[in-house]
Length: 293
Figure 1 (cartoon, rainbow, N blue to C red):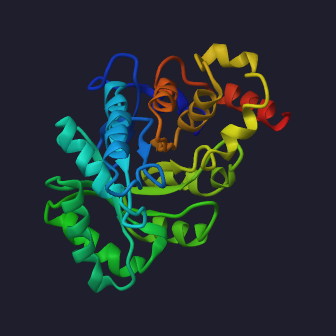
Figure 2: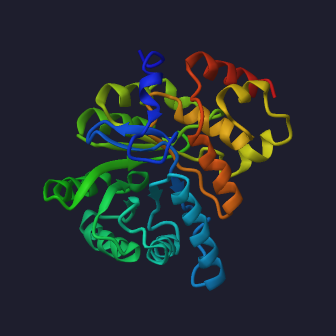
């Protein structure tokens, strides 16, 4: 069923720039580009003016190439305020699909942290708030669901990474009406294919893939080898696009969120939105080619 849905899951998004691959959020039926932007480490530059200006250029390229979803967290140092500063400089506060997290022990502390996060972004409301790494998740989900019911939040999610607490993620998906999960998924880390991705498809829950390049380690590894010939069939001009196209072509995936501090790397990443998406057979070939490296 999932393999047969691949063509429908990745399709041109009419509200975005031409030939941009988009995905539909099941709970809201909104289409967003399948490549978003993470901010872990890359946007944590403090008050360094030159670094903030450079990150603004990175975000500008992201928007120019059709991007919308930007993900951050209170855990990421100054990243939230750097994103907010860049959005203000670019005048793009209304264009971003703003995704952030609540990450604090104790449910009573959640609302204050969320308010501070929104202030740092400088936006009216978030499109998505997630319980980061399931910290005090029961209490924080109550807060987020109440915000959604009041019209102050559009989507609710939970996050984890690298296989940690995936049993808990699965139970939450079974018992709570969440809109998103965020987990690790890439061509080397495919554990989610056996449990979480099929369940997300069944429950109509959107999926964000974090650590698509294993924080750069995966790119460093594959760059030692020539790009497989099959890359030309899907319009992948470099390894970054090859790896990202593999991720976003999965029918249960909604977006991958690579993080970068460089404009040229952002250009490479966003290039994965163009051209053909690999079908199920091609994805199997891609796995075999990677495993043979």
